[in-house]
Length: 81
Image (cartoon, rainbow, N blue to C red; front, side):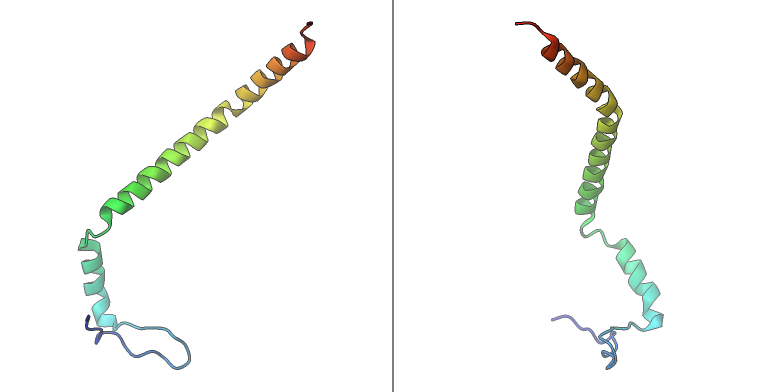
């Protein structure tokens, strides 16, 4: 089991855990150096980029598609059988 001696006890007024101020720089350095989950983060960023690119592309062709659909609808309605 992990040793959590560096964490102060919970406050009685709130369930807030506090870290000692002197340990924060060390914890931040360890967090920044850790590569656990880096591949998952890469996939999240890549997927978000693709979704944004598709959304931007759809917004660009939206007006043109609407006009084309209106023209086709008019052609179909006015066609004589």
